[in-house]
Figure 1 (cartoon, rainbow, N blue to C red):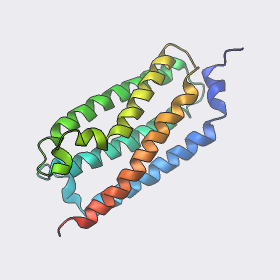
Figure 2: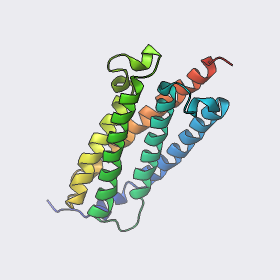
Figure 3: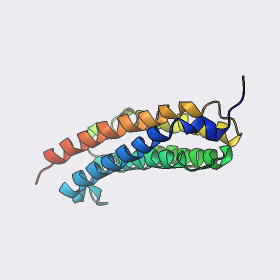
Figure 4: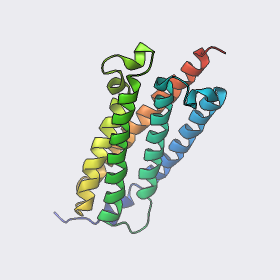
Length: 176
């Protein structure tokens, strides 16, 4: 079996990653609409639960967009793709961990009870872990896992779509 280059592995995926970039842009717009309806959600004085949820959703969308744009770069190299994928995934995991610690201070038990953050952010955590593994394989110039990049993309897409809808519902239920 011949070993394919990174570029040849990605060649058939360009339409997919272009579509994903467009979808990420639309969902970012939906999230901004939700936040524009109630901008006080993002203030430091608001309870951390909904604010962190919005932040994690935004980060997930930006990650989905970043991954898509990385895979649209002409003539990519394994390390050229792998290093940013692994780096943003590790930084994302760190941020989720910090956010879950902050959720413990929320007065709303939906956020502060045991493992509430883990349940809310399980899709994004799984996406970060999968992307980190794929990024590490690309750093080593191994293209065998590159097709698996669909897993973190779909996890981020599912997470973002569910969260955007739920955030809109939460914003609608906020007292005026």
